[in-house]
Amino acid sequence: MNQPFGFYQNEIYFEGLGGVVPRFPFTYEELASRAEAALGPSLWSYVAGGAGDERTQRANASAFERWGLYPRMFVGAARRDLSVELFGVTLPSPLFMAPIGVLGLCAQDGHGDLATARAAARTGVPMVASTLTADPMEEVAAEFGSTPGFFQLYTPSDRELAESLVRRAEKAGFKAVVVTLDTWVTGWRPRDLSTANFPQLRGHCLANYTSDPIFRATLERTPEEDPRAAAGRWAQIFANPLTWDDLPWLRSLTQLPLIVKGICHPEDVRRAKDGGVDGVYCSNHGGRQANGGLPALDALPGVVEAADGLPVLFDSGIRTGADAVKAIALGATAVGVGRPYAYGLAVGGTDGVVHVLRSLLAEADLLMAVDGYPTLADLTPQSLQRVL
Ligand SMILES: Cc1cc2nc3c(=O)[nH]c(=O)nc-3n(C[C@H](O)[C@H](O)[C@H](O)COP(=O)(O)O)c2cc1C
Image: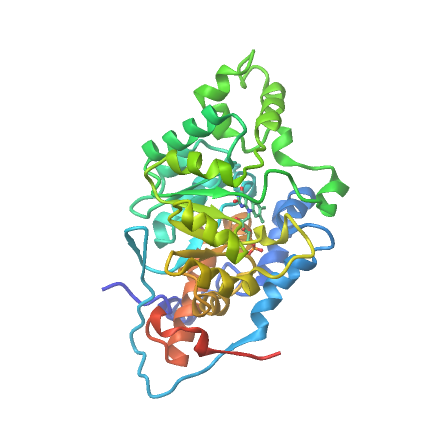
């Protein structure tokens, strides 16, 4: 049988006996500061920054501090089972990598989506691959190994192109389609405004478009001949302010599980469920899109209640294994890590991402061991107490 996730610490301590000190940091703060140095100013502000004065972004992370997990004794949680059933597949843990549309640039070789997909293969932690990748989705999916991957769709205004992207995702072997609803327009991001930097407008991370026959057919010259015109065309078709009237069409696009991302209000959960989605994804985009909102964690219990058994994916503010455990206790089926793995990618490529994921999983596993929660089902809202 596989080693428990917590075994990562044994590896580190035993290597220490041989004089080996770990290459990568163990705190979020140190990881972020190493990533800042690795990424350089404008990419760093794009990845680390958020909307407005970033109050919502900070609140996402600090919301976890308001909950404490009760330790339970005499449980003998010598073995923990973190596995979860999601859309017909059994995953070794509830952790997944949230879609990040600039991963390509975060790796030193400019192929961060491939590096991340390799980390998914090595850890069993699924990657939700963004529409905005530096390499086409087929090449990203080819690196997943036996770990399932999900495709995140930014629905273009050109419906034919949307259909083409979904067809390609199906053919490439993605196991679900995640439609992001909160980003048809970019939120007001002071850090990016002050560097006047929007990577995609500069032609970065558009490989899924420039490799698409439908997209290419709309261009007078190929993207290779005229990359500026391709980026300009992308800017024209990227945004699609969907309404509920579009949900039947979205649903009709694929037989794959369909998940809608950016859902925080219970009423929206109920409508999405009525519209036939297979899962809802509670997230406020890490506070990058709208400032002044509530922390995503505070929206989670209402989403879970309204979902009434439908799987609930969650992200926004996960920084530690303990955070992931708390989100599970509040009812999330699966938990997305965002910025931390992008920082790991910047600092150490695939190895850096693997380190971040293994650290989160080890911490979660050891917390469940120490506090007496042998399975995810043992984690319930009653396991938590408000502490502030
Ligand atoms: C640099 C960056 C790029 C992102 N790109 C995408 C994207 O392409 N598609 C998407 O659905 N969400 C995107 N997100 C949002 C993440 O999927 C996730 O919701 C967010 O990172 C969670 O917040 P956290 O990283 O602070 O925990 C992006 C986030 C960051 C930080």
